[in-house]
Length: 569
Image (cartoon, helix red, strand yellow):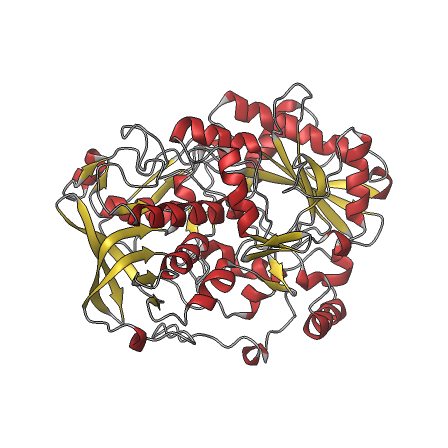
């Protein structure tokens, strides 16, 4: 938060050398490197998926694994401190900071899309909420993508990867924050219960539907990412090499087989060969961009830039999906996190509490409460995700979520997004230069169902706010304000104020038909040998909730598939 200094924190979390990519416990001496080094696997992107893959694949000692990350170290104060993601959202040192093209659905405004450009990827700058999604999400995946992705098949993977206080010996720590949530969260839950929505103690348990407190990926008051949980313990292995500030330019081929990558490092173009596979884990924006730059995509697009077509896969960059949300902001009659974190003395108090005990407001995500509910009783599954934040930011640009300082008065916000929007966007390269960001067209609100959900969700938030005991704690609605009442007014307010929830998926989607999908059910690029994609871009449809947990599951599932395939080589 503004006014809280991180001076002196380098002694607690020293920076890696982002110029050389040096990591404690791993160095170039572990694996002899040359301009044309050879590995079994070359993984592009050390994000939530790439870190898992590197750890799992290098656990087999005969596999030589190279992990390339365009960004630098995650050993930064505002990354490790859970509430610090409000700063990293607009820090170009750790964030690609993408912007979409002007979107007609949002009054031709460009949406801000932060994506992690740092060790740990977006898992190092996200809000840390850990939710698996609803079972129906994965049954739909199996229907469209093929075997291996139904809920009965992925549920054990989730259970195995999670390390929880109530059970689970997995690698990734998932922390129950219910005992530390702000007291206002109880009023929010009770207001929802008064409307007939059930309380759930665990969104990842037997009853994922309902309202409650979100679990987060923290450990002992610090952010937990797969960079820390999976990768860092594996970096002492002599068969695993991580290179930071290594910007991959393209995939290289021999015929229709991926043979390695070219990447820029220390200002020099270098090459790494892969005898078993190149694995793209660069995320929903960068993975399709790399495929297109490497000649895999729509021939018409590639032809405009003079890129020879390696494989006609027109679906690359298509099927883009995202959650789109809005905040309803209320002035409170009782104290909220604003009272604790706006005044300088409050910042100092919260900072000292955190530094001495790793507890207090800085140890949590501000998205404390929430839920997954059915807005209408006859629906087969939850259709709305809710958020309750015991702080407010009326002076902050809503679209960018640059949460730098809360309001000087007590306030809180309620938010919603449709769990599974039906609008579909796309992205495409706009240059042969890999440093030029692709054009992103979200195509928000292009279906009638998504438009209907805007009004349904807005009225749902107001019913919750009008329900006791929450209603008694509200002084007034600040945004959009009581003047906005009609369906048309609610929709126009949404178009004006809504923004991405930062969950882009689907741009290299799984599927059986190469005319409509990019990878098969084992995440192999259609028609290209030894090339896989493993990240959120392979989701055939967006999951009902935050996407980091499903990405980690996909990576665990992919690693098992890859190692299984080795046995048949």
